[in-house]
Length: 164
Image (tube, rainbow, N blue to C red; front, side, top):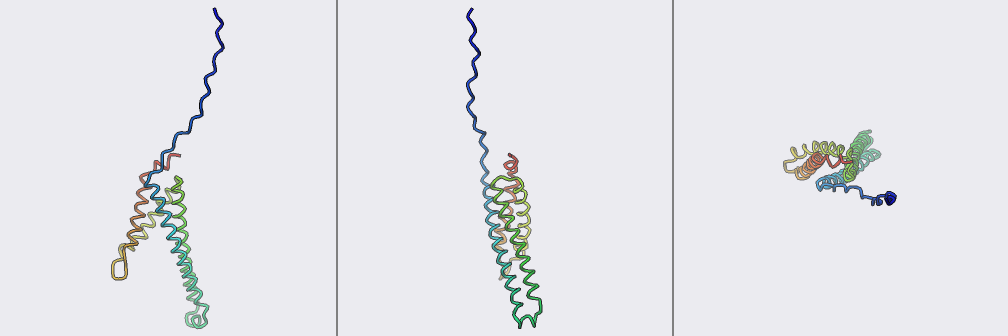
C-alpha cells in the first residue's frame, strides 16, 4: 500500500470584482441636470433681487428723497433684499439637491422632490394669471413642466436610490 500524498491546497481564488452597479437611469440624470440648471437660474434671479433691494435702500441716502419719504426706501430695500436672500437659498438648495441626485443620495432625492413640488406650486400662479397683453405663460409653463418632470422621474426611480 502506497502512502497517501498530503492533501493539496485548493488553488488560490482570484479576487473577484465587486458586482457591477446598475447604471443611473437616464431620467434620473435628466432630473438632476434640470434641478442644477433651475437652481443656478433661480440663484441668479435672487442675486438680482438682492442687488435691486440694496439699490432701492441706497436711494434713501439722498437728502431730497429722505426728507420726502423718510425711512421708507431703506425699509423697502431691506425687505426686498431679504426676499432675494430667500430666493437665493431656494436656488442653492435646488442646485445642491440636483448635484447629489446625480451622486445617488437618497436624501437628495427626497429634498429634490419637495423643492420641485414647492417650485411647481410657485409656478402655478404664473401659469394661471399670465394671460393678457403684458403677461406671458411661457416661462412659468416651462418651469411647471420641468418641476413636474423632476417629481415624476425621482418618484418612480426610488429603487435606484435604495440600492446602497
